[in-house]
Figure: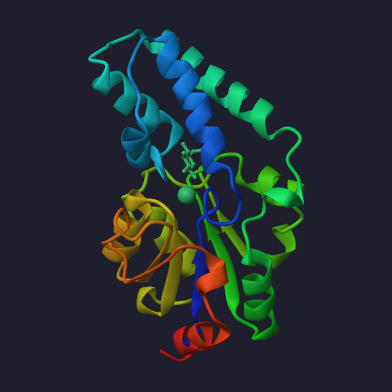
Length: 220
Ligand code: BG6
Ligand code: MG
């Protein structure tokens, strides 16, 4: 196995597509039904976190314990709501310059992987017609440990045959940045630098990432 490859690993929700807002809305509806207050600051703690861990956190915030069957039906309800929000989603939900970045990396023959907590990842990439860019997809169906555990990124690295130090992770969540850092990868935060201060680099969005910077990453 040649380990000289670089691996460019992308999170999905909030990095490639503007779906973080739909996760937020779906959880907010649910928290309201349960009479649990839910703020945008708390929502930052849910970003990147699996469906099951997200519900556990919300219930903790509300100091609420429920039966196993209610837990499952609430998770189910959240996903149904989320799916209804994204039902009509198309390429317009791709975040600015994501496609340009993927095109550039592909033209430079770089390995591109997805590292997402979502069980809906494949269908979303298909909906927005980006699936063909990804040589490897590791998502919520392939991992047992939620971010900030690095499992999802370590698996992606293994599948693109790159060592951790040669992987670059794009993430919009605190949990995801922590996962990348723990894995020993280069972490690039996409969003607010105050929130993502643990990242090696932070950009507001991909319009701020130059080709020169990408080339620098390839040569690191
Ligand atoms: C992450 C999102 O990408 O996927 C989280 O940031 C979400 O908000 C998680 O909970 C799991 O997604 P899904 O689609 O399997 O419920
Ligand atoms: Mg995300």
